[in-house]
Image 1: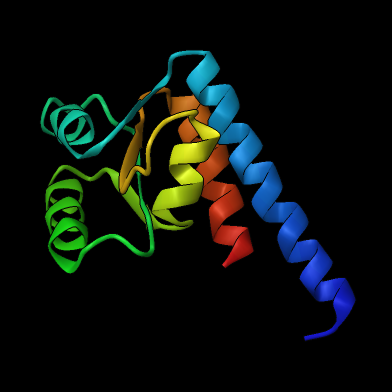
Image 2 (image 1 turned 60 degrees about the vertical axis):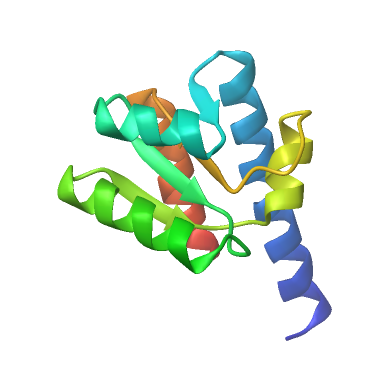
Length: 113
């Protein structure tokens, strides 16, 4: 991988983190396993983002519950970075509750992988 490719990947990651931060400012996301699980169970979540370094059980729980309810679920980022973007402690899971934010972030994550 050359320097240009690395730069593009970093730029795309930063854009995704910025979009997540904007989503939080608009109060259109919930952070943390408990809050995200409630949003999924109540079908308020439109997109679930699980940190890549989350535990196997957390990944399985959210993949299963999201899949059953036809909610998009992505593994992306780290707990530390997701938490710091939100100004909180490390977070393993966040759920986007706005359809438009969810669609845009989902597209951006898909392109970055």
